[in-house]
Length: 310
Image (cartoon, helix red, strand yellow):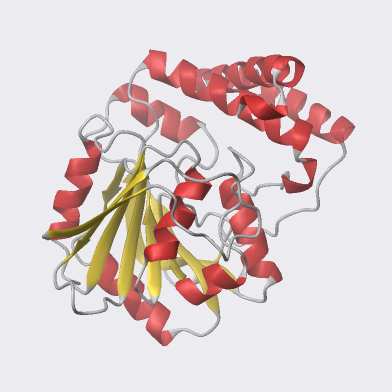
């Protein structure tokens, strides 16, 4: 697609319920015909516009899609994923927004076509995701992580299923619904998916996973990056718990499971301890390591972080 417009910084986000400063990110908009309004706006936040070569690969896959009525909006360099997506939504022209992580791999050339088909032919969907599968050519390290850790994979469904496993790596949301709920939460650096799903459900819409569709969204491919990611996840979770506990939301691990009410601190500590023991007894070493790293990051983050640090 031909690049026809570039915008930098200070994108108005008047619809946002929880804004956080102005964005210093750069926005690149790609559209086949600048005079034609697309049906779909694809929004991709990225730190460096490459993600170790994975973003260019994703853009190549988008070029191969059978569905062509879309624009691509890439937000580069914003440190807040929620704010980056909100900036993309503010300039989006499509009826539907499709959000991708910059390291997502598409499962098929007709992924977008089928996502749009289901949205056009199913009432009351506010957010729809797809399954996340382990690719056959993944390394042993990546396969073990995806198989051991909850929510790192999700199975294909055969019919539209209400599910808490619709997530940012690949989801479609009507732009009007996104604006109605006030967009992404820009205050929190972690927990964006649970917040977005909660707000969409509160507004009376369904959150679902679409049938027969999938992506590959992989964990870090090296041990060093694995350690860094899960330590940081714990630290950012501590930040949210410490300064914005109202946005801490429980998760589920299976399609169709209902999201539980927020548990007390004591129950959460006991549950976490139980998971540590269970992973040790079942020899799920990478899951155990992820829990330990997360806990270390959480404790250090809770002790040391100030609200202005993130």
